[in-house]
Each structure stands twice: as C-alpha cells, then as structure tokens.
Length: 264
Length: 165
Image (cartoon, rainbow over all chains, first blue to last red; front, side, top):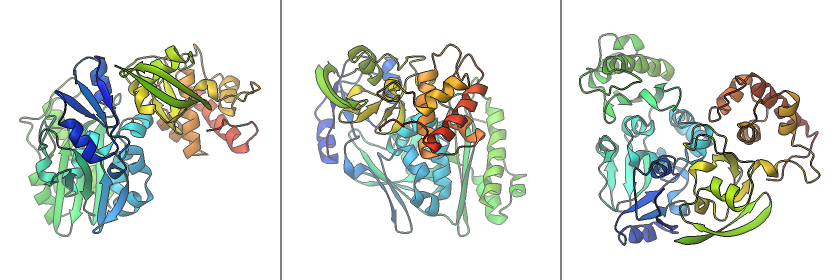
C-alpha cells in the first residue's frame, strides 16, 4: 500500500469539506474492495476519508411504506434486521448472500453501490425496487444511478448518504454465484408493484440492466413458464474465465425463473 | 505520516504510533507481538487473520488499524481463560482433531465463536456456510465442522468459561 493521510470525520458536512481539500482523496466505507485495491497498489489516493464514525450515515428505518437504509449500513446489519426482513425480506436475503460472513460484517451498502462493480448484488435491488439514492446534495433515481462498469451518476466530491427502497408486493433475488468470490456471475432481482413487474439483472452486463422482454412477459402472466419465450441477447454481455456471454444470457432466464418461483 | 491508534485488545488498553496505512493484522502481530493471528493469503479470502472487532468477526488483513481505533479487539490469544483453560471452541477443535497443520485454526476458531454467538445451535449446513470465509488446505473441513458443532454445544452448556467480549 502506498502511504496516504487518514481522516475520520464525524459528520457528512465535514467529510464533504475534506473531500474538497485534497488532491486525490478517496472515501472509505467498509473497505472490502478499496483496501485490497490499495494493497495491490492499483490506486494511490492522497487521502482516505473514513465514513465509519458518522451517525447520520447509519441505520435502517421505515419510511413512506418502504425502507431507508443509511449508506454506512453494513451488509450483515441489513441481513439480520427485523425491519428489513418484515418489510422487504428479499433485500435481507440478498444482503445475506454477499461475500462471506466477515465481508458482510464490514462491507457497506454505500460502498457497494458507489463502487458499481458489474457483479455486485445491490445494484439489482436498487433498480428492481425503484430505489432513490440520496446524496449530500440531491436525490438520484435508482434507474439513473448506474451508468456503466464501475461508473455512477455521482459527481466528484458527492457523498451517498442513504438509499430509499420502495416496498414491492412481492420480490425475490436469485443468483448464480462464483463459488470462490460469491460475486454474482448472474443475479436477477424480480419485484412486483401492482401491475408492474421489474426484472433487474446484475453480473451479466457491464452494469445492471432491466430485462424488458421478461418484464413484459411477466406482467401478462406472472409464472416462471411465461419466461420460456423471453430472453436477453448475449450481445454485449460479459465474458470471462467464469462464463461466456452466451452462458450468461442463458443464466439470466434460469435465475429469473428461480426468482419468480421464489416470489410464490 | 504516523498516527496514534488506541484500542482494547484482549481486554487490555493499548496505544501505539503507527503509519496510517498499517493493517490491523500488522498492528496485532508486529506492534503487539500477538502472532496467533495469521496472515495466509493477504487478499481477504482465506480467513487465517480473522479476529473480533466489537464482537464481530472481521478479516484483519482487510482493515486498517486506524479503523479499529477506539474498538474492542479479541484475538485467538484472548479466548482462553486467564488460567490457561481453553475456550470450549478451542477444546472442541483439539478433541475432534479439527486441524492438521494448524495454520488456519486461529481464524477458524474465531469465526466459529462468532457464528455460535449469533446462532447458538447451528445445523451442519449452517456451520459450513458460516465458515465460507475460512479456507483450510489440509483437513477437508469434516473434522472442523464436527469440532464447531461440538464447540457450539459446549458453549451452550457453559461447561467452560467463555471469553469476555
């Protein structure tokens, strides 16, 4: 790891002020991606601003029928929260499937979505649950937040403070995970809001996307078999040593079927 | 630039001046001499470095010492009672041969204690899932799982003094 200066602000305002002061600062959430990156010397920030001691970034509460989750809420807290399990159980089970126990004890919601890893789990929930990402200066619709591989709509110096998830009538997340890293090779989050069905796919493409054909098919007939005629194109999907683009396209339908079945 | 980090380690208050980039595992091993916490893969995969920070198991190779400033840390050295009586989970690992070379054992035991603290009577499947973040290259896990199940039962029965954490 290259040397950096470490800061631990006590408020979002202080963190924003610090961000503006230095040449190449980075925000530190739980550090489960950033610290391994630094250890490999793939990044060289001048300053690390640890968000771990800011009370306003923490906590889970019900709001407007849905859930508001602070950006610094750790995956384990979401997984074990009675409130999350009652209001949006699919979100708790998604969090429970991230990484391993120790990663879940450190990793945070804000850290995950700001990193925007193409195979992270949370992006699928942000899009499927019609979430709103709140920052120190505005609100960003979940549909607009992820703009590409490791890219978001955030401006330089902008800090995510919380995410508001809408409560679906029913929802489920199914993922085909990499057995070593537990990242999603393909993950599909299906959520039903009245007559609207959302199918958000992570892991398959450069960034989370909605499977339009599948949404249309499920809106007409919410059964796994309704997906038999729907598919996603393999064009532009990720291909690596774990899975080809064609295989990922196939997995999208399989995971979507599992998610629909899990919705009950 | 050096910074001062202060925390409670195994019940004892410690304070040291370290480089800001110092990892918690480096702090524990090199500054405090607590070499029971191992560095295996150094890439947050193997779990040999698992310790408890404020009661939660974490990989100390993927946390800065500065992030643990003000926290209560427990390492494998802090599990046994002051008179040397092993923690029930340690005793179960010995009894059930839950180790071969022993390199992964401190992390396995720390993860197991955390698992049982939140799930006092885990099923075999839950134990295997709970140990996802720990890799053993010798035993094939069978005896480790047996040891954790037995350790969980012993912790329930309170036959031995549990670590203060």
